[in-house]
Length: 234
Ligand code: NI
Ligand code: MN
Image (tube, rainbow, N blue to C red; front, side, top):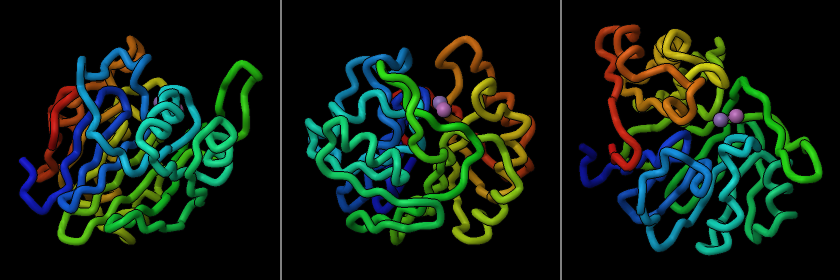
């Protein structure tokens, strides 16, 4: 589906997404692998994951960050407190940033944007403050701008994300219960004005009941909702 110049987007189940640019930069967002019931069986990550982006500190988004970063020598990009948290747990290279900031990752510009969700990291010592939840806008020259929303409800300032970055593709959570469901996601699609919606964060666990088919009935005409399965590449 993607042209030669475009970034390849592979869904690895739940909210784990692999972005591979035409120039060879591999970025993994929210690594949830070992405990992810929807991780595509036997899927091997590329030999090198250059960067790992974390949207927030919940276990279903960060549980495999330390082993993947160690194995691949990845640089982890996250909000400041979460970057510090993973650094204390063995990640050697981190970039701590904050909302509104942009970091240049090889040829990729990653901008941290708002999300409306909680963010705490839980481990055997309790729950830790790791900043607020965020999304990312991923821009690569010559490829459509991508909005990766992270876990979030819809919020009015998604309009600003649309105005500022003009994403053509939006990855939106649709499962409900812990995030928005298709009803809210349809409005989110309108606010950011993306023409292609890649749904994530659904079907992993029983409460996450929202489906792409349901979303497809709710979005404005001209908006395409991609029906994909874990392991599929757009
Ligand atoms: Ni979450
Ligand atoms: Mn989640």
